[in-house]
Image (cartoon, rainbow, N blue to C red):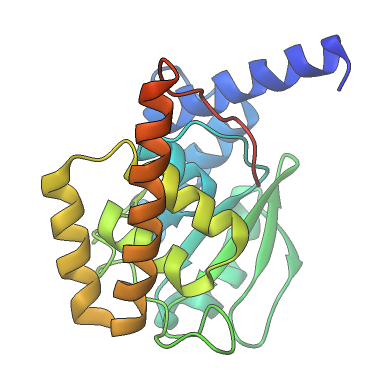
Length: 219
């Protein structure tokens, strides 16, 4: 990547992180998109749990992402597709199973439908906003629920996200996450244990080498 391109990318990351943390007015495109989702969720009574890369940032792992992933309960999927254009959200794809795709000022917004499987071989379905800790409005999924969604889709990027968040999470919270996963499915517990071991090994290596290097890649 060219120097100018890298500088622009890092500036985008700083704006993205600030938008997630609410540290600036919604001036960036991600900030405006998040503000729009919050407005829609409040006015239409549709709870939205933000997962994916933005939730990774919220839980301590600063990385790039190109979109906003939002879990919606099954009863509001069709309603959302109908009302979203009123808020400036362009409907790109209306999926029969609820995997709708929107765009707001160039920011892709991907809907993750409650009750569906994140992949065909997933052992459990996607939890709803309430199960993820969001009862009203638009908010970030709690760390345990967010880890659950990542272990369900379990792509390489999902595994990397979980490892990086584990490295930034207290032992007490890690125990709570594992207890939560134990109530969901044994497969998730096994996956978590594998990633926990990898995270602890990485953290020890980083400690020996003089500290962790912030990773800022991903989608």
